[in-house]
Image (cartoon, rainbow, N blue to C red; front, side, top):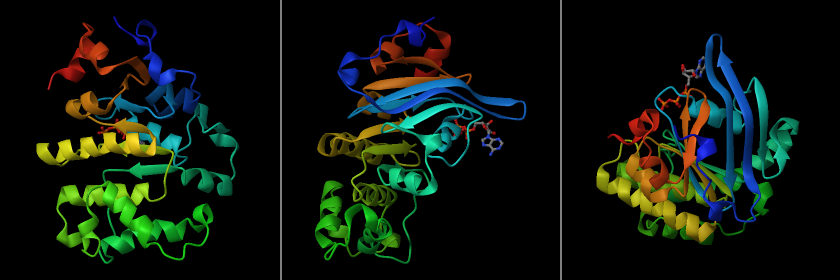
Length: 260
Ligand SMILES: Nc1ncnc2c1ncn2[C@@H]1O[C@H](COP(=O)(O)OP(=O)(O)OP(=O)(O)O)[C@@H](O)[C@H]1O
């Protein structure tokens, strides 16, 4: 069986690099339902790390613990050198501005134009950038980076599903986060639009030097974006490695992820 212990973490992801996120021995149960049973993770600066796990395996629970929306039963979580549990609400809010989210339900505000949707986080997190006299250059830069500058004055109802997802990504990028958490970034999209989003995720990593944690069921997405992958099985990081290392495994539990 290939387990974490048997697969070396790709060295260039680690090279002289401190983890920007570190999770140690995370445990979370709901009554008898033990969801996380000693889960570990390290996300290194500038890398795209994909987490795969079958439905109900605890990926969302792990992310919720990571961003402080759910309390783990035990374990240690460190983000950008800070022990998550030691932070007060103000410190937690400040740390959250360094983390961008692209969740399945990251909906745009329907009553606002694309421009207003992008201005919204700038106003909400004034303390990060200070007063901004003219938001237009920031809004335009974020839209250019997702290839949708022309959509600046459109309403969400006028956008396709793929465009909405790109605008949501632009809204995340406008805060220049150091970390991006993607939850099923390609779900519900057709194969061509999925490919565009995947390409965009790679460009963003290059341009912004973000570190990303990507939860996906989409094997194609994992193959293209992942420098490293973790398979979450039975509440633990069952296997870790590059896409090729895991895809060539003979272990039945690992093979199951790549049969699609
Ligand atoms: N608030 C909660 N109360 C009780 N049980 C919960 C709660 N949140 C999650 N669970 C349970 O934890 C387990 C893991 O759920 P989770 O949503 O993390 O799965 P997932 O891997 O994200 O699944 P999917 O890929 O379908 O989104 C499930 O058995 C779920 O029923």
